Image 1 (cartoon, helix red, strand yellow):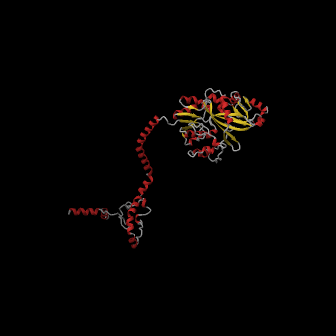
Image 2: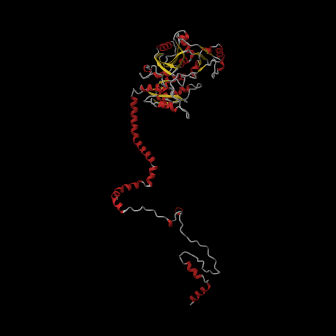
Image 3: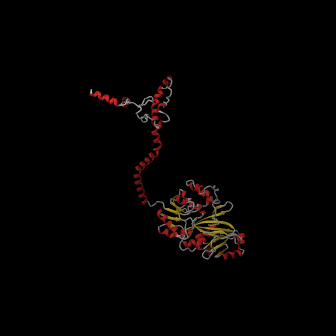
Length: 510
């Protein structure tokens, strides 16, 4: 009775909506308030309720899961076709399975990304496998070469941009020598592309302020390559600097085919050339030594400039170093000389005789002319024509015999001669020297490889044939210099002119 009275009192105290609220609170279902539900006046409105619903990710936002389209399947083959092709399909099933396996996206990625790694790994494993045997073979080869007394001797050649240097290198290579060549900076490295050259170097250009730097560069090459012979081709570098380097190279056991510095000054100096010719009783052209501007003006005032073609050449020790030559204009007002004329830097004006021009390449050995190649300058075909000239050979022998060298000379000398017409001088066809240069000249292209150094001339098959650079550059076993000379040497954006024949040294400057 007491419990019932308590419940009755509690029910009387609770609001009328309490039973409904308790029932909803104990429910596990979603809360949904119907707008028709009646609320008591004393109850506060409940907070807004949001039902929890599953949301789709951004991946499926465009195609909702409920609207996903099932993939289309190919229509089944007709029954008759399936029966007929059943055996072929069974036979090709392994192939289709293999193609499916290979065409997997993972395999595609591996085939695209990993080939480089596969090649590198294969090369690394291959090199590791053969590195040790190759090292042993290399050691055995070095030991055998050290005991071999007949190993090829190394020859060093300068003037690596000239045609005659290329021909000289090929001759030495054919004779069994190892050829090393070099050229000064700024010159075209023609011999670098030749198969006859084993090693090519570039050295700094000789500097008159420090002439021994050039000699030191040559000595480093000689010591590094174990050079036995040095044959300078003084086309881009005066022989004066090679003569200064000669004592330094001979100390390390390298024989140099170049005279000493004093003899180079004698041969490259036009005044000394005239003196030796007069001492030997040989004819000389008319010449005038000038030591200042007053001498040049006096020469013009004498009217000598109107009597023929003249050129002015550097003389003395500095002349042998500079090797400059310029054409003299006939009118004094047109004379604009870019060089200094003084007692320290003398010059000589030479009148060019009229007649046949001849260029020689003479090989000197112990102050004896052991070989002489003569070429006639063909002004019509603009080239050199090899010829057998006994008179020129006799002239060279007589000139060399009257030289008084400081020591026996060994090397190459080029003489420029003119055979005067008898109608011009009244003394018959005599040879007159107008210049000389120390070094290998273009007539050396007539040399062959009869002996080990290639210094024996055979001009029989080349008589009355114009020497052409195309013929001199091209060789079937060494074709790359020909291509490099006419293609790589051309500046960008300019068309290369047609190949020109070999020409004599130009008048300005040598």
